[in-house]
Structures are given as structure tokens and as C-alpha cells.
Amino acid sequence: MAVSHPDGLSARPWVGETLLPRLPRLRKSSAADAPADHWQSADGSRPLLEIRGVSRSFGHVRALHEVDIDLREGEILGIVGDNGAGKSTLMKIIAGTVRPDAGHLTMNGEPVSVATALAARRLGIEMIYQDLALFDNLDVAANIFIGREHTRWLPLLLGFLEKRRMHKEAAELLKRLNIQIGSTRQPVGVLSGGQRQMVAIARAVAFEKNVKVLLMDEPSAALGATESETVLELIREIRSHGLSIVIISHRIPEVLSLADRVVVMKRGERVATLDAGSTTVEECVNQIVAGEAGAAA
Ligand SMILES: Nc1ncnc2c1ncn2[C@@H]1O[C@H](COP(=O)(O)OP(=O)(O)OP(=O)(O)O)[C@@H](O)[C@H]1O
Ligand SMILES: [Mg+2]
Image 1 (spheres, rainbow, N blue to C red):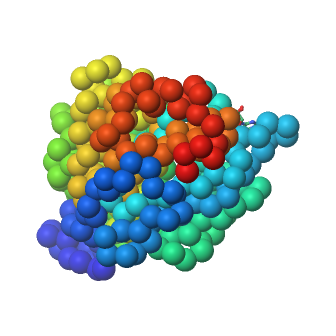
Image 2: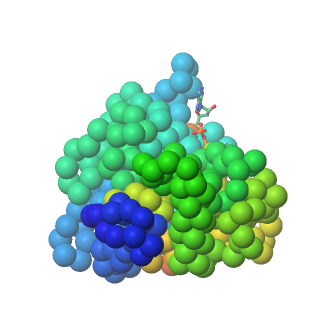
């Protein structure tokens, strides 16, 4: 949708217009452990994303074996499991950076191809990797706009004007997302871990109006308790805009407080899908340690 920027500089979409209210949230399911391939929303529609029979090996290492997972519209899905359980590989397959050996994905019931990261992005799937891929020497606004800078086709001075505009829009975006960063002119390298994580999240969701799925690989792994809580609040905020979020974490209590459902992975297989509201840390740990594929769909 082309809209006018308030300063009249461009007819292109701008940041303030990109996080419009999205699809209404679906009700939170009370079913503790519905089979992944039989879930339907209240209005009878299918899950936003269905992952079916996904397998991937690296040489002799079986990273994933016939994994089925649903991601529902507007939910936060936690993924837990021991080191090497296949969590990151699964996310990378959804994000188009790793190709599966077998299996397929559907979106809104239609088979989709995520052969490349670009293909995934076109479908509205964004991934934030653990290293965040930020440019420490650039400021906050530049990081948010990287690759998508505002440019004008008039000579002189205008680079400066567009910079001002990007700072203004970046500040509006941060405010909208309730992100506390002193100035968009601060280099990202001086920010705290939590602030860096929040800049990465803001960048992922800010510009693509069609972002539907946000994949996050251990967003709070390197953060202290207070910073983690701030990042979790931001994730809840993002979800309230209608996005569906998948979050990998080793912090079980954190996942249970944040997610609607939690998938437990073990040795490349999904061993359980638990309703976060009615399960316990002990049950999660029990599934991580002793869960068996097929025991809990
Ligand atoms: N590019 C690769 N080349 C070879 N082996 C890989 C590659 N990526 C993943 N693996 C292997 O696949 C298995 C699953 O790895 P993955 O990174 O998905 O696990 P994970 O659940 O994310 O673990 P962690 O919690 O430690 O991040 C591991 O045994 C890992 O060594
Ligand atoms: Mg991992």
C-alpha cells in the first residue's frame, strides 16, 4: 500500500504505517496436546504454518527426523530441547537457509516452497539469528534501515534530509514498540545486550508489512534477568500486532511464561507438544530427558 509520508518526501510506505493492526488473535487453545496435524482454529481454518515430515541429515548426523509441527495464527510457540536436538536446524529450514532432505511446509493450507531465505521472506517469514547480525559501528537508525535506506533523486543536501527522516521514523518505531533506547544516533556497539536484541527485533518486523512469522533463536540467552524480561515484553508486544512467533530457548520457566504451546525436541524428533498454561517445568524437563517420539503427538 503506498501512503504519503507526513513530511511529503515520498509516496512509499513508511515505518509508522507498517505495524498496523493485523488479523484478530485466535483464542488460546485449552487442548493440552492436540495432534499437530489435526488442529483447527475456532473458525475452522487451518494453522498458519504446517511443517510436515521434515527430515535433515548432515553426513551421518540425523539432525531432524520426520518432524510435524503446527504454528497457529497469532501464537507464540516455544521450542525446547537439549543441545543438538535439532531446534536451530528446524528454524533454518523454515527460514529458507537450510534445505530439508524430506518433508514440506504449507501456509494457510497451501504448499509453499522456502528454498531460499528470500523465498521465505516473501512469504512473510523472518528469522533473527542468535548473533543478531547487527553492524556495531553504525547507529541504531542505520541498523534498522540497512538495505532499505530512504533515498531521493535530487542532488546535494538530500542525503542529510533523508538521514533526518530515517532517524525520525526509527524513533517513531521504537516508541511504538515501547523500546527504550536513548537516541537513534547511538552506535549499536555501545548498546546493552538487551537493547541490541530489541534493535534486531525492530528491524525484523518494521518494514515488511507482510511479516507473519517471526523465528527467534535464543533471544535471551546472553541476557541478565531484567534485560530478558524487557525483551520478553517486546516479544509479547510484537505478538499483539498479530504476528506468530517461534522462540527457541533453554530457559524453561521463561518459555512457559511467554508461549502458548511448547514443542519438545529430542535427537531430531518432536517428542511432545505441551500447552504452556497447564504444564510445569518438571514436565518439560521430563520430556526433554525421557520423551519418546510418537508418545505424545
Ligand atoms: N551445518 C551443519 N553441519 C554439520 N552438522 C550440523 C550442521 N548444523 C547442525 N548440525 C548438527 O545437527 C544436529 C542438530 O543441530 P542444531 O544446531 O539444530 O541443534 P540445536 O537443538 O539447535 O542445539 P543447541 O541447543 O545446542 O543450539 C547437531 O548434532 C549438529 O551438530
Ligand atoms: Mg541451536
